[in-house]
Image (cartoon, rainbow, N blue to C red; front, side, top):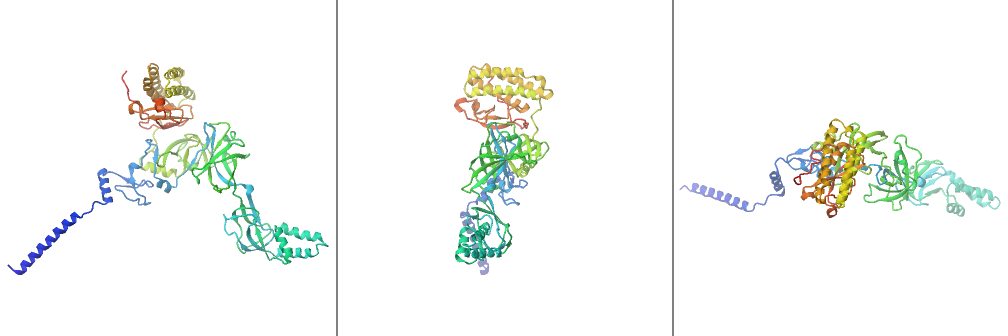
Length: 592
């Protein structure tokens, strides 16, 4: 064989062997998939159609995780943007998105049923603790010891040093008068009094007399302790008599100024206790008493200032802090006006939209329709749709609404239809009495009282017989007749029930028709609650209407009194939106 050919063949075999050996070693030493690759594979397995979006910019919709190209935040799946509360009107956001959108909230004023009046306002310095340090004689600022506003000073502390030719002359007069004070005591006293009027201290005057020399520079001293809120001079300035050099305010005493509308004023009296909080000190509550009520209304806002005084020795509170306060009034006036800032309103006519902060693990905001009244300065009266003390978004509402719209949830431009029908006040008053009788039945079941339950059914039947069905026409008449038949049938079955267990089964159907009546026509109660127990009837779940916010379960009574949750709140005068599946009929529990 040709030697060169043999060498070439041996070299080829050697190379192939090396490649095979290298591949084998690489396969053995191959690391496991990186977390990012594993996550990517997991995402692919979970669903190739997952859409990733930004909680702050929901218009960003990508097919894979990453960072938002606008703000750099981590993208999240769109299914995490939906409400976890089960309420399609609630939109959830991440804390980062809330911070980036600069969302601010505030509580709504007004009086609740307990006689607590909710007011907003701010902290102000006590006007009586504000002092101006003025130039008592003309001169030039030679030294400045206070160089910025906000600096704390004590009474008698040096604020500045002044050179004044007039003061030099006055000192010479005192020295000369002192030499002949035995012969001319009046001149001596007049010379001293002149320096006293120029606010020289007795120690300064005595030092001039004892030394017999004039001082070219005189110190300007603080008249009171406090914080310098204004500095009007700079080094080298020439000042004239009476010119304000500094403003000093004592912040150990502050005013709490609250805005009370004219409908609220009748329930506020001097001495009423106030509890308030400020956003800058979360979790802390301060107390004070009403010390002054402004006798004049602001012509623009139609509000008067209510003042309370508070000690601020710890310097926690600062002027201009916003305040949310509750006034313990002596008389409850649930009809008092509610107002909201115009910045909170997404305008769409008389029935507009605001966003209400609701309690949840993550920041959550409920879209709420409100009926607006007259404009009062920068605020609008709210005729219905809000309760006193609720927390609404006053800055950033449009950002929330836009994000909800882009994520496919309900928004100002995509609102569900209204389920409620307009009826006469007389008819609404009559069915309110039906609801009151229903509450009696519900409370008897809460107390495990079968006899009381049946008495409540008799009262409900009496109230049903008083309802004038001719007061409703067309669709409203059809709706009422369906509800009336259901209410009568459920009432009869409860009345014939031999046990609490049986009565509770039929109470679920009675509750269904009462809820339908409330949602369709409304009742004259300021607020009622739609409650739900998921464990009722072997985990089938059941609803009921309650006049109380606290859960008291009529399906379990004392055995599980607080089992349940509030699913919806109905406010007087607020139409109920037609949400699919919001009030499902109870499933048949047994055959009849």
